[in-house]
Length: 164
Image: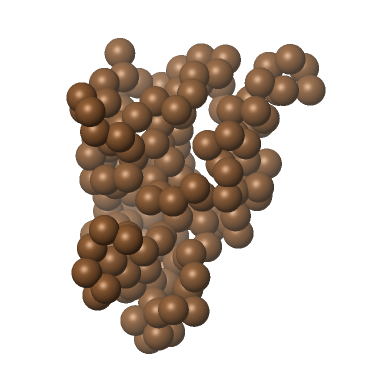
């Protein structure tokens, strides 16, 4: 059984949808899913580096900065597949301080995992939906609406399940 979301806490291992045996969870606190669902089917992590509106101005941009780049790669590499979306409003971070998505991808690949860097929710849904099968878990790690991925992925999976 998938870890239950914490009582009265939204966006902490929150099951957003279960379609055709595929579980889609949302996790705002990215680290809580590090190892929680590895004992289930294949696991994909989908992340969009984005600022946190709840933190101080410097801290809120940590996910978009290169300061934790190596740690991020290590924590994502527990998944069978990792999909990284382009950094949300990357232009707000000076280039020399910005998270290097390609380097994160290289570090994840060194750990023997499949990784893709894709532009947005539409590209991600188009890439992963056809590959998913019953028993798989998709953990979406973001603190925003992520281009409607929470609606688009289940919708696409329903269509695929109906033979679309």
